[in-house]
Image 1 (cartoon, rainbow, N blue to C red):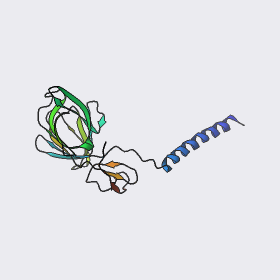
Image 2: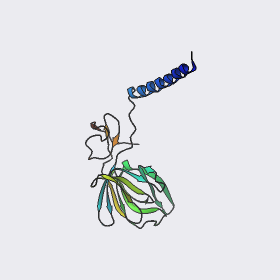
Image 3: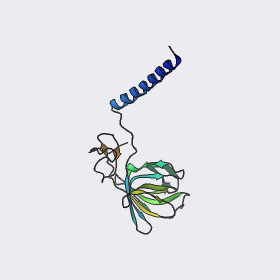
Image 4: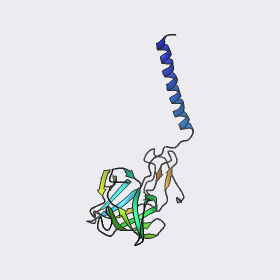
Length: 191
């Protein structure tokens, strides 16, 4: 056999293997892993309200996150941890940026469980999402006392797309924006 025929056969064999694995993945029911879809109402220091959907927090390195870094504690010690958006109902900022901890702002935080805590929230980044008034992507920086409050538009539950499996914590979404499929109610996430 000629070398070019052998090479063509080898390329075809690799192509068929790739097609086989893609088809097997689709038929096995693997869902597409979309990022969770949150919606928030943001009140700035001039009482202007912004509504962002598909919201995420970008840290100082511009990396998207679906949680805030939180500090809380007492005179004896402070714990720092990440708190997922799905557990937060509302944050009301109560103090100056960088006070008392650099990069953190004092706030009152209400969880979806109804519990209220005094915490410090890392405000060195910004919130990005689709502004519902203009229908385009927008950003609001959290530092410099620009944001008075952030209210999540969810009660701790979520809905899931029946086709692609995407999670939606935005109570106002009626169908999946990715494929138009029906969303089904899910039980409260417990971890």
